[in-house]
Image 1 (cartoon, rainbow, N blue to C red):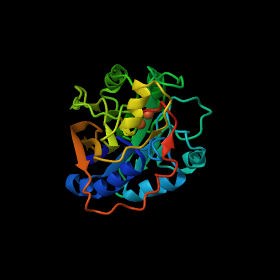
Image 2: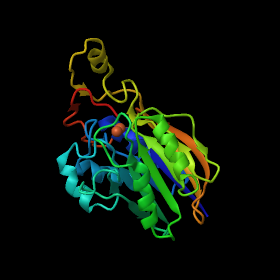
Image 3: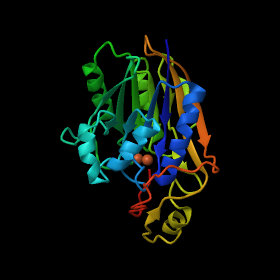
Image 4: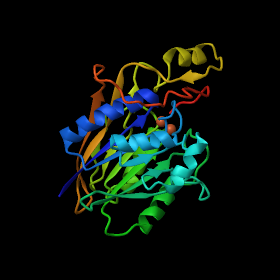
Amino acid sequence: MRFRILCVGDVVGKPGCRVLSQGLPALKEEHELDCVIANVENAAGGSGLTENLHGKIRRYGVDVMTMGDHVYRRAEIIPVLERSSCILRPANLPPEAPGKTMVVHETKEGQRVAVITLMGRLFMKPAVDCPYRTVDRLLESLDDEIKMIVVEMHAEATSEKISMGWHLDGRVSLVFGTHTHVTTADERVLPRGTGYITDLGMTGPHDGVLGRNKDRVLKSFIAATPTPFSVAEGDLRLHGIVATLDAGTGRCLHIERVAYTLDEAVPGPDADAARDSVIASGEHG
Ligand SMILES: [Fe+2]
Ligand SMILES: [Fe+2]
């Protein structure tokens, strides 16, 4: 039996939520999706997630939400991370960190997909535990009956993400990277059956720098002046991949990049991620 998963790259601010809400129904219909996973670490004003947005993004049709280095940027999300069964924190944060390290999503048809997210250690902060040992431990603890396993590698360095793909080839269904907000063109099925891409890209405004207002980012680079970044506004696109899995074995049969561009003529939902839209200077990814 075929199982189709859409994985959506980092959703940035109100513009990202708008294109996500419009693009998901279209992509679900086009690709006959069984499951949607999205990185939402930048959904609230460019950094973090609020409880309200967690509810909205669920209603848009996302089954499993992942978070990266901005996971605790909004303290209000901590109780949600603890109680919700559809949101993850990076598994290799310290054991005391709040939130789930693995989620098993069950579809209406009873098919189960395990999702894990990990953070890289190169050019990232804070320091985290070894992602390789962490994922090995989690996979060991997983019920053998669960064949479909998706692992996100939230990392800055392409080398770290590619290495994780090889580390998990044949043991999980899919490894995808996030955090750099720029889609890579290296999607493929690795020799032992794991679908792989180094970065999904970004869901949000592409007329800026990684989703931030370009004038402010340029000023920070050119004048070396601390400048609060705000979320950019134009050229809204959803970026990600659709993978087709064999539900019986968990093997990836096919992986392809997908993109959806906002139709400006369609009014946006009442997204409220604009509040607190100014984030701290110097924060990307
Ligand atoms: Fe990130
Ligand atoms: Fe991000």
